[in-house]
Amino acid sequence: MPLIRWRMGDRVKFDIKKCECGRTFLRLDGGIIGRADDMFQFGGVNIFPSAIENFVREIEAFANEYQIIVPKIGSGKHLTIRVEPSSPTLSREEIDRAVKNFKEVFKFRIGVTPEVEVVKMGELPRFEGKARRIVRK
Image (cartoon, rainbow, N blue to C red; front, top):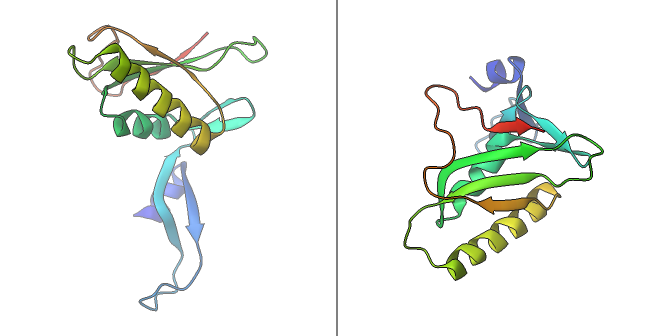
């Protein structure tokens, strides 16, 4: 139930236009954007970890594990996203190409250019239940 999700703190985008089928009820454009309690601000931009997760999963050279390092406001440091390669056989050129593509997509969709750190496979923490992917420094 989209409206219940909205009332429970999920971030949504309303669509009030009349549907092609004739439906006039309030709809959510693009579904659920993210959770308000997971959102953080960096560089004056609201960022949802779920959006970052989608970007990471779009890049085939990256595994599904990632970690977000959010520096203190005013520290002058960049937002850092740590990712693992999807395969140990990937060449350095393939990884560099994937990092460049990720940064371009992130900058275009979010408006912030992150630092991307590719770590060894298995180096990022694994969680049972809800993953804690944001580290504030």
